[in-house]
Length: 293
Image (cartoon, rainbow, N blue to C red; front, side):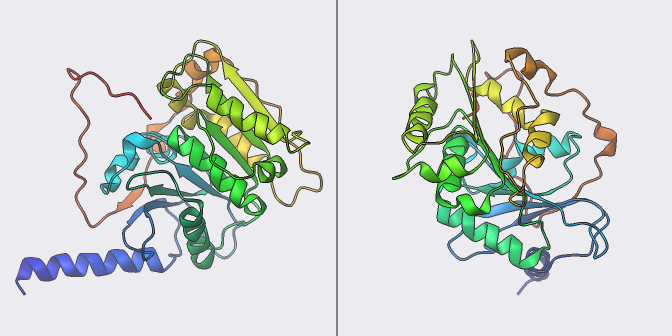
């Protein structure tokens, strides 16, 4: 084995160790975990600052991306979403799990495998697990929450759909469904289908819906950067004596203009642990921007 091959092997062993052994950490870390679960999704795992045995347990946010970020290049998952929001200076005091789907619809069982992986290795607050996603990720959110409602404190599904045999599990979880009326990639009728299926189950008092007039598909990605998105999620817990959906935050198409306010890049001191050089490159400014899906 050549010296370069030995060096690459050692880097891979060290990365696997990072993904298998939780670290006592006082700084933010973002770790790329590949092949950590046999047959499972590769993923990014973010650990917030100040984690030790004396601190209160922190929640877990699961971010599910859309179709445009599918593949086997984890750097694509950094293109938009919760991890990108952290890197741009949005403070989120929680662990964040951001898997990459190689292609096809999100599979709830595989997402659950990742959740159980985290629970076995990190002392997270299991009463405060949150899921949010957009487009294909919005559909993945609906399908995961509907399959494992007992594990989710609250969820936000942006311009998604659903493929559940029963939508009744969704009625037991505070759920915020948001869709733009001008969405041509995923018609708003797909979200209406989910809502109507939930209504057929009976009580939908934990459901909140917002239909944003004139808003297209890609624009909803701004919600991942909006401060109140995470405040809304964190307002819910499985330990609440009475489950209720938070109505404190109002939104409108104008809300999306505020999404990037109060970002402070100077606070971004995230240590990235990745054995592979990212191969994803952003398109040049002269190239027409691809719609987020």
